[in-house]
Length: 532
Image (cartoon, rainbow, N blue to C red; front, top):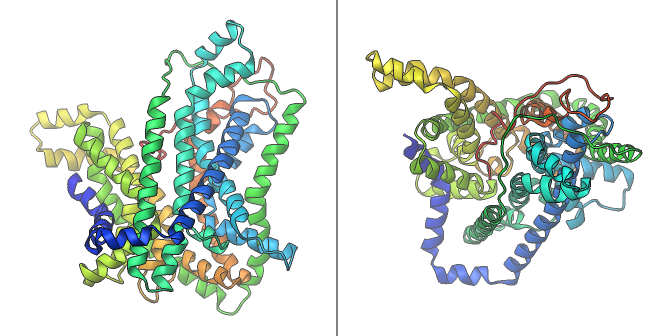
């Protein structure tokens, strides 16, 4: 079952490679070695590097301030710093453009710099969350030993603390870079030519299917090279820490500089959350007052719910056997299937959507222009979220119960239905909720594969922002962000971000920002297990 589930999820990748091979290596090479492709490659790499550096600085800096210093309000900022994940990139771009247009009617907020700013502000939580969790769970004994040998605070930070959290830094930065390469909405609204925008334009405006396939394979190769390079880098610099008795985190006294840290965190919060709030609250009243606006928003919400529900059902059905195999029967097969799921997950949505368009037209015509082909795209993109949740729940369930049931004469199928599945259902529910909300925000695959006449919150927002109808777009954006804010808040609490900001954190003096939150555990049940 796990093999079949993984094979279904890999259909878009396999079909993309098959169609590219049918065209021939010569024509493909002729299309790849052009100035156009070189320019797209350079722009995509430049944007990825700039955003990676910015996300690294913001993410690591925010994580250090809220977990290791006495900066005022750090418990509040521990959650606020994660909330930009609730804002889809195309919503962020739309709000920044609308605010800029209100500020100046002549200067346009668009281009490379604008895209770098927006993507940095809304991808840095991918670095912040794992680094904050790693700093909370890092071995305090090594740091105390370094200080007892005469190392200063900064020397200890650079030589002991940061090497311990290097895997989290590398993994979070990798996620930010992959997000930039796969992003379609923000770069399109801000008019930056990257691979995703060029692929969509070639397919929809130029009707150049071969060109779109060629660009998709180049983007796939670029993504694979980044994954390969990051993996080698992390293995070369891996550090391991001993896990002894858990010690309270000793917070650093910043003195007067604590207010500078507070100002920095506040500035980031205002940029990431204040700008969208001002934009949406300014336009949403005008948007809902338009004739037929409320029925249109409700129809789009119903469309989002229906396709997201179909995608969630298919994704969790495929994730269940893979997750149980990984948790209950660890080995090479389970590890290979899990990595294959993450390989499909690394594909940009525009590539998955384009591949399934060709697959539906030539192979699965009865499913073309149906909800289930779009659900297959969602399953390909978000299968690891379901696998991680199922594997986490199955791994925590005591296997002794299954052994007792088998010893009493139950068959394996009966044990699965009466013991394994009920114990795994909490993880299935958590994974289903995460997959459902992620499906609602997916834009490029939805644009390419949605059935004719079906609109969602994401597609309606996209169409309105394309002609700069900000009042029309605001209700869709507001509802999308509202739906995504709740799971993002829960994610911030469950990744252990608050564990280093509660009563166990100590400075040697009473904590002036302590409200008594307890530990939440590090990266447990978040869907981040097994992430790059």
